[in-house]
Length: 218
Ligand code: ADP
Ligand code: 5GP
Image (cartoon, rainbow, N blue to C red):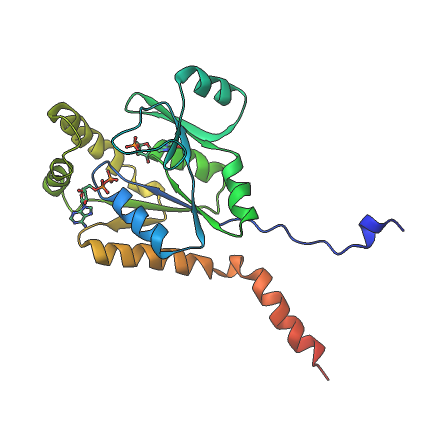
């Protein structure tokens, strides 16, 4: 008998995938940063993008910044699990992010737009999708202005896009209205914790418990 057949099969751990989307200005980046610092079991999916770095953004931290030609070559090479054009720039999730998270024993958190979330949910139906929205249009406008990041024209465009994006809320498993920041952060952390103990994700933990009873039987 060959050695390979004798060895017990070790189930490959798969990362639980959490996908977060929101209209720009809803508070998604703020909430994702709070979640990432509160939950060391999460790995953030660093996307590839053709957009230029903003402010203090560094290559390889939030994004890998590449040119359009390189993006198209990587896309045509099948390197992305999903990709989309958002506000005139390309964004893509690299296929390796899932394996990297699984190898580290972590779950994966993706911050991607509604198109990307839809595509990824088709290929990973067990992915958990969360949509964050502002309490109202006026509050979204206030938040976009308070961030002091965008021109008047960009703010107008983001507000128009927000309506279209919000109409996609039905494709998500969870909808979180970001009113009070502390409360929203607690709810988000709660969703992640609850999803981890879903029965379907507990099989590996239940098996040794059952075995401990079986070995004492009689
Ligand atoms: P997004 O990543 O969705 O574009 P940001 O996280 O940049 O949004 O948040 C937009 C602005 O709103 C920021 O100035 C942020 O500090 C603020 N903000 C986020 N959540 C809240 C909240 N619950 N209450 C008040 N202000 C908030
Ligand atoms: P920003 O340029 O403001 O960081 O992001 C713009 C939009 O692109 C956000 O809605 C963000 O969620 C989305 N985004 C970032 N990375 C990806 C990605 O890899 N795929 C898709 N589909 N959207 C992404």
